[in-house]
Length: 260
Ligand SMILES: C[C@](O)(CO)[C@H](O)COP(=O)(O)OP(=O)(O)OC[C@H]1O[C@@H](n2ccc(N)nc2=O)[C@H](O)[C@@H]1O
Ligand SMILES: Nc1ncnc2c1ncn2[C@@H]1O[C@H](COP(=O)(O)OP(=O)(O)OP(=O)(O)O)[C@@H](O)[C@H]1O
Image 1 (cartoon, protein in one colour):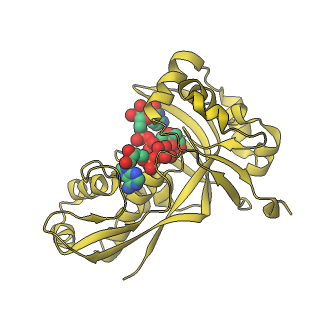
Image 2: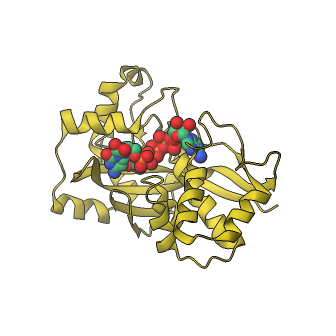
Image 3: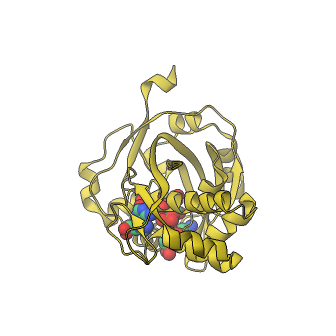
């Protein structure tokens, strides 16, 4: 059966620009990590209920793939979608670590939406799929569009392709289970200092390499300081010259060879 790749991302920069109810508005450069992906495919079922075959610590109901199925069913009321999932399981070769700030759950959800759209000929556009996925996870929209690099804003729903050279990354994910809501809450209570319009404009137009060469880890990512405050053990893992992705716990840096 066809294998679909669900790529990881890193946040080259992530700055908060305001609040929207319990969420935060951001401006962030997302870059896809070409060498790190989960592999999704349809597979024969081993039981009668909705089935995800793979190494997950969460329940089916908590799995972003199941949430994406529910959201797609809600949006389309497609009988063929129900039939598809009565006939096949979703098999996931999980390579992207969880609680890592690499968008693994969101990427799986986006890939699942695209797989169903393709095999069932649902004819949904990327805009429609991104809207359907928005309630599953803030990063789903980026993965639906499938850009190598993009400026992402709003609470993740505005995705604008950014044309630039793709970088290769080294990624280090310490075994620290970071909760995204806890990090955002700490940011709001202890570090809230939204970026203004001019600074946002400047950042959106700089290449990822320029950004990484000109900003420190805490300048590039507003969630780094709150993550360090809430998870003190992160300090043992930080090394000079590395950057922080999303709400963590992954650190990354550009591989030497992509600088040549
Ligand atoms: C840190 C990022 O990964 C950046 O790439 C995302 O902003 C977070 O993406 P995510 O883990 O998919 O987040 P979600 O599962 O949608 O949201 C989890 C929780 O994080 C907080 N949250 C998330 C996104 C956002 N723009 N503002 C927030 O305040 C909210 O408390 C929300 O309930
Ligand atoms: N398809 C999925 N893949 C991985 N984790 C999932 C998935 N669905 C639900 N989860 C649960 O979500 C939590 C972490 O999700 P995820 O791997 O997306 O982490 P993350 O690194 O925090 O992502 P982000 O970069 O969006 O912050 C864990 O509780 C995990 O069990």
